[in-house]
Image 1: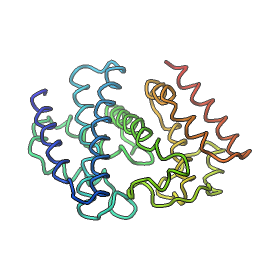
Image 2: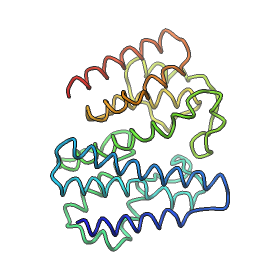
Image 3: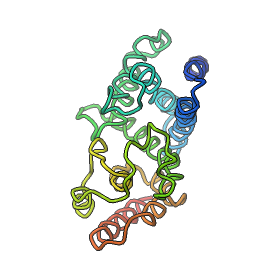
Image 4: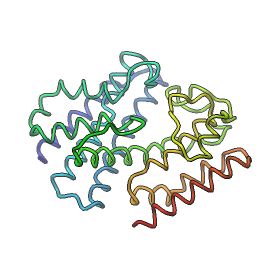
Length: 260
């Protein structure tokens, strides 16, 4: 498997670099995605080891992390955007890319199906139902690993004065206020669909609500240690309803970390 993983890493590195552009804004976006891929791959491996996965399963987690966003690059080349709502679901597109790669045929059928499922589900609002517990487990691993790094990516743009510095593929909208329906869902601890984001404030609420979809105490501990939650909270407007939502969120975080 290590030989196959080395082949996959070489291919993915060359593939991402093939999208480099002389256009400064495009290049910035590609580099962010390339760096994100590296961090998520490391997160997957570290989380799998923390969960005491056997070596083979740690390697499968590594493959999933490495290829989870492979569809992003073809997405931009076709649609000139990283916005799924304006183009194509990047996870679904990634599955199409993977199906074209001969070295994936070196995986046995069960491992290939597991990798495919986890990658396809990594960005969905909820994981598709299945009776296969291993598929669910690996889907949860990549979802946690991905979220953990997206918090890192978005951290520099939390303050409203930095919102206009966001790359085009992140921003879309710059208004600071939070849409009333997002506030109501936040107070109830309900997930919010990121495709419904209308303001920069909405984006912050969506990222906070991701906390309810963190699956493992290891991930939650990392999020807390790096201060991602508090940095978002500090950039929210003073509002009684929002304060109630934050209180509920902190209680949930404490409960999850307590399960370590």
